[in-house]
Length: 290
Image (cartoon, rainbow, N blue to C red):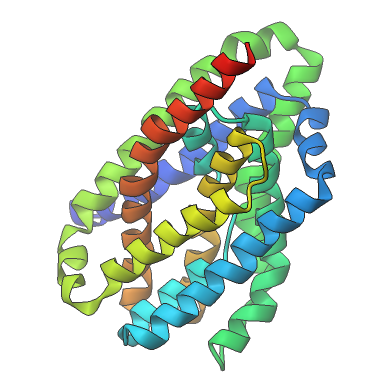
């Protein structure tokens, strides 16, 4: 493997490492009950599903048809709009001082629904496309479910060990994901710059921004949940979207480029939003409650 290929692959491996370490740390911090309880609010759960699987895909469909995106960019945008649930939202929730168990519960639910949703909806929006749910479920199982379950077992069997190591793993996860985002921007700079005139960046900005609005408005009366749902709705399920794109459209380079653009735009919008506005709102709420 030459140096160029290594640089191209390194951000992907950093993302994989982040997901495993982050889910392991979350499992060591939480319990099954804390993860499941937030979803018992059926009304709020239904709103989360509507935001991610009705409003965001409809927005993407509108953008594709009105911005006249090139074929590959349009494919990438539709695939990302139809996939939801990504482990990175838990880091954003942490930065925003949100409700981590709630955010994790929503993320897990959206990931599982994506496995069923994409094979049904993507062929409707992209005629001629076939989506294999097994290919979507594989990374979900290996990278998300297994580390989370291991962490929960460690927490149940060795609470002191989990208490000691969970914060360390959490710091490692933060380093890995920020390094991955920076490397994605550096390594794929040329492809991103070439997309400036193709309306792809504009489409990504609109998709992410409207995702924030949908989640915040449908997040219910609880300030933390509004912010957490805004993050979960805006940050799309990149791994599932890319997996479908690579399998079904291997010759469409712009599909991958669109995914990178959405990741970078999401980072540019959601990282500052979480660390400033949402954090301030949540801290103010906590202070008022005290």
